[in-house]
Length: 431
Figure 1 (cartoon, helix red, strand yellow):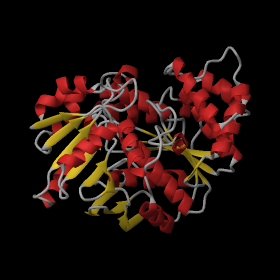
Figure 2 (figure 1 turned 180 degrees about the horizontal axis):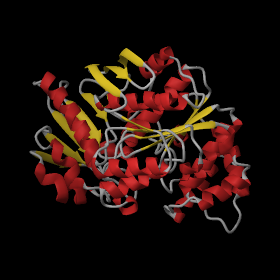
Figure 3 (figure 1 turned 90 degrees about the vertical axis):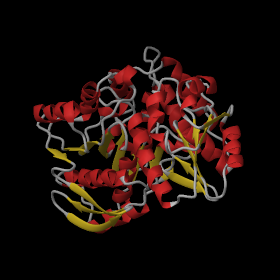
Figure 4 (figure 1 turned 90 degrees about the horizontal axis):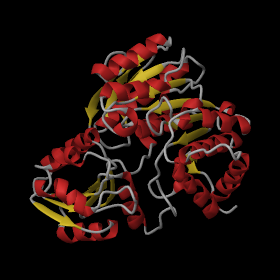
């Protein structure tokens, strides 16, 4: 099997759609010899912030000398971004070999989904690579997510918001119930700034399962001392003048959750010295989230795709504009058809001078006509472009060197623009 045929095989499984449940995953892993039991794990869920938190956790563990696996989704440009060991993506040859093993292990009466097989692929790679600790980002929800077969040292739920309602429910309480499904009996759980009914269901679940619970703002704290600087006060340590390499004030909360997750795991034998915490946070990389990839004009990429993430992005843009009154913001917007377009763009009405509506090269993408009907009239100047390349060219043509072009609404669109900036191709298929 070649790398390209491995990619084709995996994406061919998308015909099975999304099937929430764990039996297929458990059966598959049993046939593979349960590779997920050959390394320790930390499990990170939530609506927004879970990828950033997972990346920071992995960076701190690596700085402490552990061999660390990191499993995240989706990818931006290259499928192999999803599966990393000590920051290095899985090799093409390794992926081809492991996919062939997986294919041979799937009996005719088993129909794993794309995400289930991708998760099993990650577990195999981590086990074969001698990973000591794997940091696993939940794909969708938690209770029935394919990653939820592990017995982690600790888990975290970072935020709760409305997203993927067709699978997880239409209220924050219902979504909180699904996210709380990653809580295991006796396993410590760290919770971000979550309140209301979602917090109530998480708290009840932790109590019912005897899981020690720590909560941001109550049991541990992040006190901002600068744009990317903060002091951390937790259960077992206090650290001043920490610096987080990721942009945005919200990342200070994510960083605090990552440190608290490591504190929670410390009682179960994972030790990360204070110096490793500092080095990890200072060096962490997480692309496509408030990421500046060009200047003059600034080209900012942010994968926000739900209303809560849009508000975080809008807060950053508000601060940016306040410090540069001569600058304008041009929004390049593309979204999936199943997202709440109108609510997503609300925070940007008074911030944005012009919007360029476009679509990623995916069947799920809303067309430019659909976006124009739902959000186009809300902006002073609205343009349309059929794809990422045309949209980026149009935005640059209309921008001055002092302006900011913000590409957002979909991680798929962000990935396409990153590929254009890099001058490279995308993985053959994405999803």
